[in-house]
Image (cartoon, rainbow, N blue to C red; front, side, top):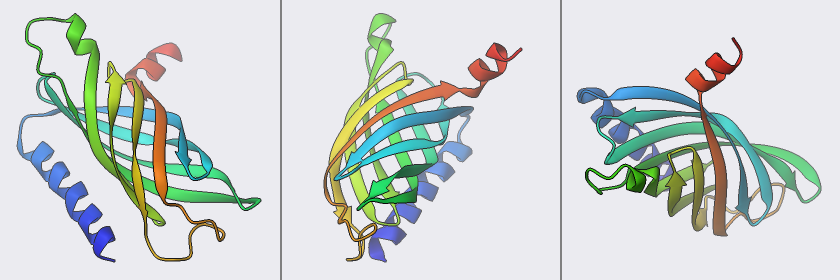
Length: 162
């Protein structure tokens, strides 16, 4: 319960920081792959908060779908990320960002670090700490956490469908 409270506080703290300042908000749809002692597909949405391109904040919610102990399962996931790149006046170096963040489901919490290309293609990894002792369909979800995610801006999707 303490971990869920910490995630809630972190999620809304980042949201309140972004709302108080003059940030531009971009909506994205994300699809990806998550390995958490089991393979999951991911589908969801993210909000990207941008003031300048040195520090960028992202908040997201998605669903993890996969098979655990031969039974199909869906888990809700929330995440908060900070993307960092402090290279000045060099456009090429702003093509990649370092990512630090945390993701949480109703079964585990996982701090993570990684890299993203243009904020569109993410590769992150971390370590998951289980919440409770039941796991998912009897499968414990702790240990190595790997995420590979494609973030598609909704403006891009809107322009493609015209």
